[in-house]
Length: 97
Image: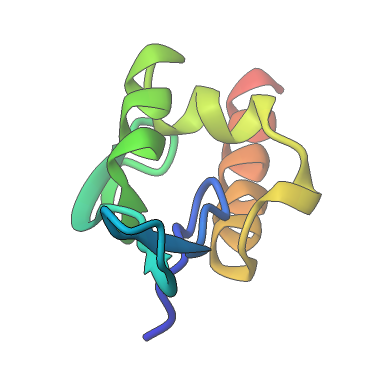
């Protein structure tokens, strides 16, 4: 599995380890990914996603998965999250009509 958050798209970053003698060696900074089940109120079920802790806090801050998906642009989401967003939008449109 790639180490990319399915919601925010946050991935690995590259930097340096710097020694006391100021020697620099390459290293990677990996996001803190967690396998979580987020509940979708519109769909009425849980959705398993691999999300960074930063992304999880963003979802909770915006009032849940459905609200967060509706506020986020498609270009920032993974393919799996885009599919989920379409399902949620369809359910919300059905409830509104």
